[in-house]
Length: 287
Ligand SMILES: Nc1ncnc2c1ncn2[C@@H]1O[C@H](COP(=O)(O)OP(=O)(O)OP(=O)(O)O)[C@@H](O)[C@H]1O
Image 1 (tube, protein in one colour):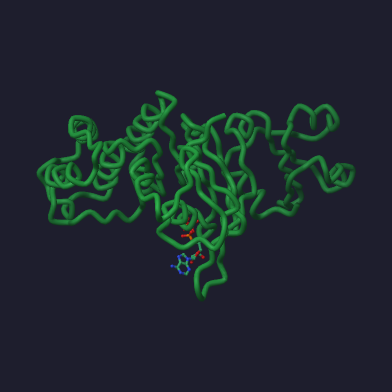
Image 2 (tube, rainbow, N blue to C red):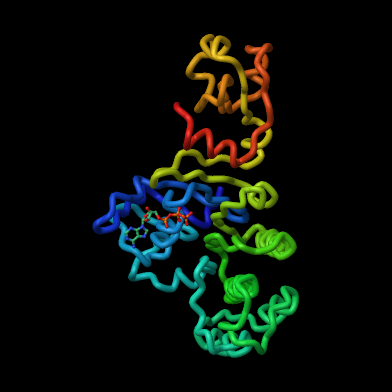
């Protein structure tokens, strides 16, 4: 399998903070969308910043299309399009003027594509960035990220705060971006239903550590949530679940193979599971 991004044993600490990324490793296969999920403060933005080399790494390495990302290789960064929650475009520029600036900065700037995108997303071309709504600003940032020839998009909460109609438009764009199997996306989102719609893989991060990375279809169709009473729980072997938690009189178990579990425990109820429920069980449950 070809990977557009490989994060290998990444560790990073902030001066004066207890938080650190602890040996973070995961890979984004070429042509795919990887959802990056974790609670507030789990380390998603820190991981993105480390990938972009905007914060210092203590150890580990980042490879983009097989090439190591270092300060000596700044050109690799041109392959990456970025949409972060806090966008910092100069407020007095309009979309049209921004395009003129980016034309000079990016060798592969595709102005036709940019104009098409902002028309399609209905971003007003003649209004100053500072006067655009938040949703419009995120759409503009997405159009920019997609128009400079990037093969990998890093989207950090790029759809947060957007209404469902706009989010749907953005999700369609992301799917089209990866359609040719050459482009790829790593996107963090607290709106896990969006990831359920478009992601191929999901990576979970918690307290600076990767706790699970898996194909989305495996998570949604093979994983499950088993619910039982304490007496029934006593007879389940520890190796049969990944995590469990007590909710009232019930025990909930995260299981990685519904069919196998059902065969052995016919009396225990097994339900389908959502990305949110997997995260809750992994983060709040006991192992
Ligand atoms: N510049 C900094 N100096 C010290 N600590 C920081 C700095 N930036 C982030 N942190 C801390 O690092 C931890 C991880 O933050 P990060 O922004 O990576 O989390 P996140 O998963 O993106 O969270 P959210 O979902 O809330 O955006 C937090 O505890 C945060 O307070």
